[in-house]
Image (cartoon, rainbow, N blue to C red; front, top):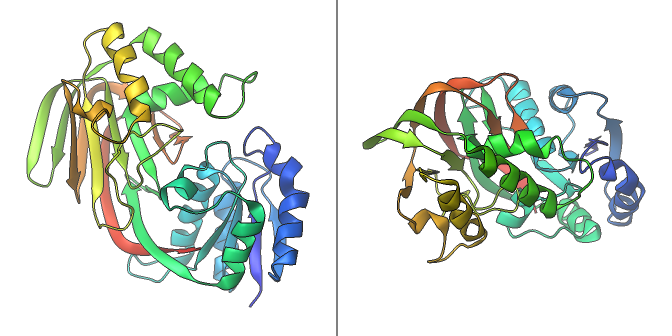
Length: 299
């Protein structure tokens, strides 16, 4: 059956477009029969994936980064219609800067290996997550984390994970904070917040924001907390690169829990994102839910 490849040329600051000939050669060498379409604007990936799924292409293959995958997931859901409808399998050609979902699933960033995994046709089921009216595959957040993203989008002279780190330092110097109410299945918190991160996967933007998340356990992983000073936030930053006992989630003022539903209310608007893509406006209220095992990933 013919696959539809949706290329996001902008991923990784146009590096995705530059690497497309390499990706195309890998797909052809692996024997993948496909047609190509190229995204031309923000949000276009969602439309292209929905159109391809609706006319019967299977699988859908996205060539880009984590934001491209997030847009594609929304296109698959849009095409499926009902919440219990089966989704078209999704293949991934990793052309992003961080490729966090690929890392979290233990898949290879090598394009030839990625193409061969797609050609093999074997899928794995992972959970599909939702924040308000947007779906995501790997991570969502409000507070400091997407505030970092607002800085990240303004940095053009640095590439890769280093750009995320510089953006994090810049954001911490601003020290944004909120008063908030966080509720989950069997608990709640009211008080000051520096960050709230909701993960399906362990890593996002190179940081292990929800280090104990499992994308196939049927649970959202919620990490949240408050650090009263810039020094305290800077102390947490290097520990966000750790997954074990030295993780930032074990520091004073930080928590990590698992839940199936999460609601967040903030005293004033915050930036928010799903899979690295910012919401168009800052918001105060976020509602999270999960659909266990609904997303089929090739590889």
